[in-house]
Image (cartoon, rainbow, N blue to C red):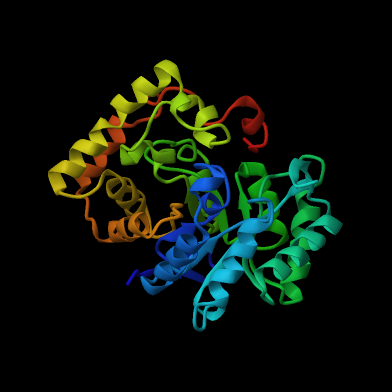
Length: 334
């Protein structure tokens, strides 16, 4: 069984690894490849293994990912009370498509009420603002979120992909328990300023894409080999010369994995877990086999020399290409 970790200083305790659910509904693979039965079985198996920190969002689908989680918990004895549910708001969704940002206080409440219905629950354990909305002062957003905490509809608050000033200003209104952001051996942009700030304020870090969007597992193909609609087809790091350089950069992870007799992805997750007890990665998968592999990473031990070698091999500047295309990067508050 997985051990637990604490996010923030407000009392939020979660499993040391979480499960990202997004890929069960969108982004990776085709609709035909998705199997609801296997997705639900994966959620059930996660809970059995003690991986009870489950991450979703209203925009995944949109909406259908939260509904999928509700169906999974409905068929799991004691399901809702055995898990910690994190979800997110912050996008404008029109005619089934994401059309922009919207964190107006009235929309925050509307979004949360919708999530509660879809999740078939009376409370959200961790509510994130999915992206900082430059049109709405962060104080107003967090004020609206805090009202929901006082009403018992939300337990703890988080931000996603927020920058330093937004984090400080938000935390001054109501304690922030967690920042969700991309962080891995593959993507180190948080290290110079964000991680020190989180530790100064006592905020936990929830890294998404902890496996480098697949590169750190070794199971990758060039962008054009993925079907239309698959996120990786448009990922700059999967394209052209970037792909070749990045395969070479990830070789150090594969080599260490072979030496230790574990999977490359387990090395990547172990590296994150060794970075601090305030870090809780949420690798995403829609299959039990990969889930079990990810959970087993909590048992992998890395020496200080191995950590240093990985740090050096995948140091900032060694990875080719930006982590997002320009349109996506424009929504990141940094």
